[in-house]
Length: 110
Length: 117
Image (cartoon, rainbow over all chains, first blue to last red; front, side, top):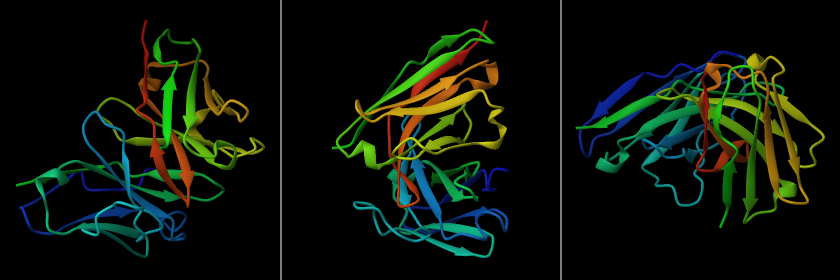
């Protein structure tokens, strides 16, 4: 199972919105509404932001939103804040209880 | 409060073995799927393995080559990862993670494994 494809980096200005894509195949992202997104600061453990494509765990800001179309899932962050500068990873169920992560995207807030 | 505390990392020789442990508290461990995820230095996250709450079912990343074994001790709220025949490519931070609602909800702080001669 290959890693999901994410852009290596994205950037946006304070207050703007950005979208991070996550492209898989018909055997993972395309077949299941089981995409999740994680935020990771350098040297820290990842934190769950979105699960089942577009659901929020308790305590996560609604500035983070998820969607999916075909084999591509997306994370949108609206109203960019300095604390959003981090690495972001997508993850998808990929059959028979196997999971696959994306390669990660570094977000820079300008 | 959910707590996951990994231990057992350190320096290992190529070809050697390590056993990682994760002590869980703050939730019903015996009812929760558990997962190991690793992250090589400067690299992305890699899902490795998971185990059913009663330990009767395990799943592994396709590339594991039979070298890793995930197990659990529900009586003592412990998760394990036995790593055999390690190579420098196994150098990474290893995270113990809870799996709820098809996502990875709670993460430990990780334990660093370095494989080098």
